[in-house]
Amino acid sequence: MHADTTTTSQPLTSPDAPRPPAVPESSQPIGGPENFFIRRGYRSRSEVEYFLDETDNTVTWQPDVYPYAAERAEELGRDVVIDIGCGRAGKLASLASEHPDWTFVGVDFGDNLRWCRDNHPFGQWVDADLESTERLPIDPDLVRRSVVICSDMIEHLVDPAPTLSLILGLLREGGAAAVLSTPARECRSGYDTPGPPRNASHVREWASDEFQALLRASGFEIRYAGLTRSDDASNGLSTQLLLVGTEGMEVGER
Image (tube, rainbow, N blue to C red; front, side, top):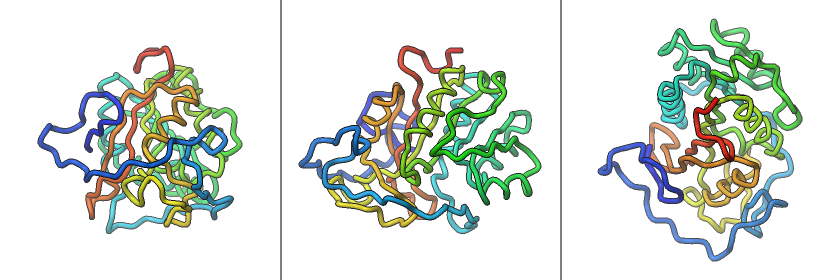
């Protein structure tokens, strides 16, 4: 994981860690809330097919996000991980094997969640459509002991507002912090690419400054923003990694 200079924070790696390549700046300002702060001219998809999280044992996508979240949980004295858009929860299973005394809550719907219930011997599995659910049925005591993860899921949503509202609600109810990741468009195809994304399951992809603007407008306070590896094959630094809290509340405050 590698710190970016888009916002101030303690770096995640040593100063001699590799740096991402320089990216030409955009000629346009970020957009407004009507386009989720994406620059004018970008084309999002109006719909995508359900993303079936089928296991690929040859490549691990975003390999550093869940270990980073676990480190933050340990620092903040939390022993519950709530994974929003968990898919088949392969990375959550790895955390469960490393932290058998922790509680894990996976949130998703459809075939992915059914697979989790049928195949994982750990965890609580919450069925929720992340574009319409307003509140999650999670024990308040668990929420107060939690760190939230939402890893490379938000780009699959036509309307990300309900999911952002759910995460914000968990933090306001006592969750210590949320770890978010999503593709960094400027590193993959450039700030001013017209879209839609090359990945047909993605509705849109944000540049880092656009996504940070969306989070701030949604009520989050950004405590760290940088870049992390997209996968463990190419090791390319093209995924955004953020640690967020709520406005007016310190990360970890109960």
